[in-house]
Length: 102
Image 1 (tube, rainbow, N blue to C red):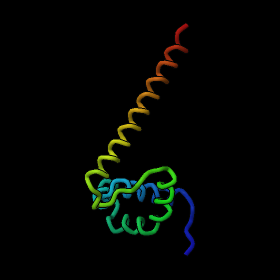
Image 2: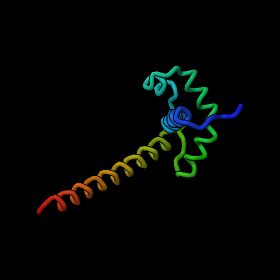
Image 3: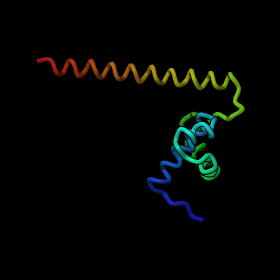
Image 4: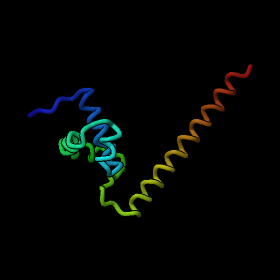
């Protein structure tokens, strides 16, 4: 069966990526108000494609059996990205302040 490409498939892939990144499909299904079996089916359907995209971005999926070291590494990576984004936001605010002064 040929897979369609469209907005619904994009949402499914987004949910699959969230499931792979979090490592907890059941919790995510409850949070998204999706049946756990439905989300698991999407993970089976799109896993290879989403993991390839994640690998190209340098992101590794967590599994439900991930160790503390792997979780800590993901946390550190997320905190680094958050810090970079906060710095970008502050720089943009400064630029806006400078441009708005007469």
